Image (cartoon, rainbow, N blue to C red):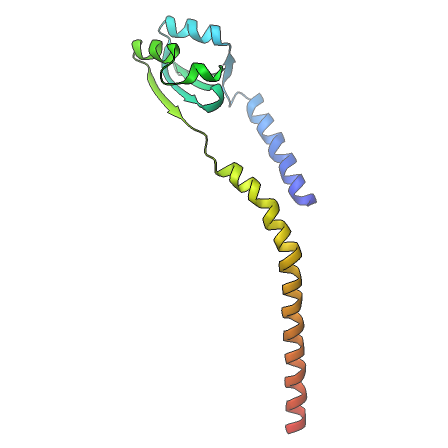
Length: 142
């Protein structure tokens, strides 16, 4: 358990360091993003569930924007404005697998501890007992 916590701690520190070094791009407000779109500076946009928007400006700069959920739907005014400016537009949904895996993990650990460990100990005991019987039989025959 301590090893897992240490790994999570160092992964978090690594993520913070990567973000501090500029790997995650800069962040702009929703109003500033709309101004960039109106000015024609946006080249490509990825709209994700939860209002997370990632945009690439002309010149290669990457920016992140946090918008309300209703603003990142295919029929919103923002998407119409982006399409009118011929911006490369893509919608992405979050994968549900991480949530499923995190919900199954406690059940799997419970079963491993309360079913797997006793069954493993029982199997070891049976193997030890068979080995002891085989050794006694061989001595008696010899």
